[in-house]
Image (cartoon, rainbow, N blue to C red; front, side, top):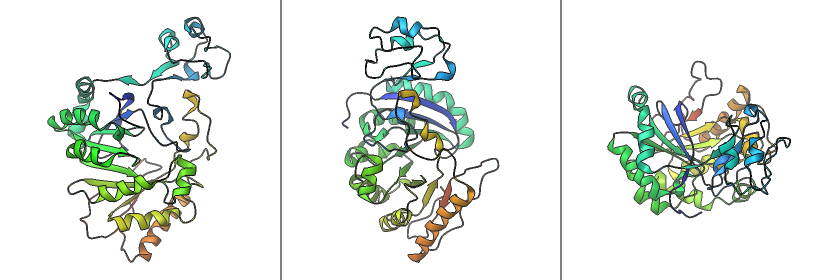
Length: 332
C-alpha cells in the first residue's frame, strides 16, 4: 500500500492508559496491508472512508432510506446497508439523527490535528503521557506523520508509534524516527506460512524491520506479542518468537492478553465474524503463556526478571518478561 496524500483518521481515543506511558491520546489512521483474522480495529483496514452502523442507537426513522440515491439503505435489514450497492456517498450518515449511521475516516490537516490533540496536554503533563499513533498501520504514511510529529515535538510532546511491522524502513527512519520516543512493535507469528494464513501476507519484511529497528541507537522499542487462542499461542510459536527477539537483541517481550472484542469488532462495517473465542483468557492461561516464554529464555541461558503483577483494579494487565541482555534495560 503506497502513501497517497493525507491519510484518513478513523478515530481519536482520549485518556488511554494502555498505549504507552502515562495518559495517552491515540490517533488511529486508516489503511493496513494485513488482514489479521484477530484484528482489533477492522474499521481501520480500508484506507477509504466507510459507513459504520451501530444498531443500539438506531431509532428506525427511515431517513437513511430516503437519503440514499442507490437504494442501499434499509430499516429492515440487520446491517441497514447493502455494502455491494453502497458507493460511500455518506448521505445516509448525514441524514441519520441518532448517529447510528456514521462516517469512519475523516481528513485532518496536520495543524488542525495537532491543535485538537493539544487539548489533552494537561493530562500528559501530570502523568508523563503523550500521543500514540496507531491504526491500521500508521507507518504507511511517513510524510504525513513527519509533518504532524514535527509540530508535536516542538511542543514537547512524547510520541509513541504502534506498528505491525509492514512499513518502508528507510522512509520511516528518515522521516519518523527522529521525532519518536517509543515504538511498540507487534510480532504475531514466527512461521511465514502461519503468518500468511492468519494475516494475509508472509512476515519477511516484518522480521527484517524488527531486526533493524532494534539496532537503532536512542530509540526505545517494545516488542509485543498478542495472545490469540489457537493462533499466536500455538505450540512452538511463542518459543520461536523468543528466538527471533533474542537473536535480534531485544531486552523485553510483552505479552498482550487476548481481547475477545475482535470477534464482533467488524460488525459495524459489515465484515464477517472470525472464528475466535468470545471470552478473555483465564489467569491460568495467561500464566501458562508467560511461563512458556520464561522457559524459552531459560533454554537460551538468559536470566529473566519477575513478571509484572496486576495493577489494582486491572483484571487483564500486560505481562512483561524482561531478558537480561547486553543492552541497557528500560521499564516497559
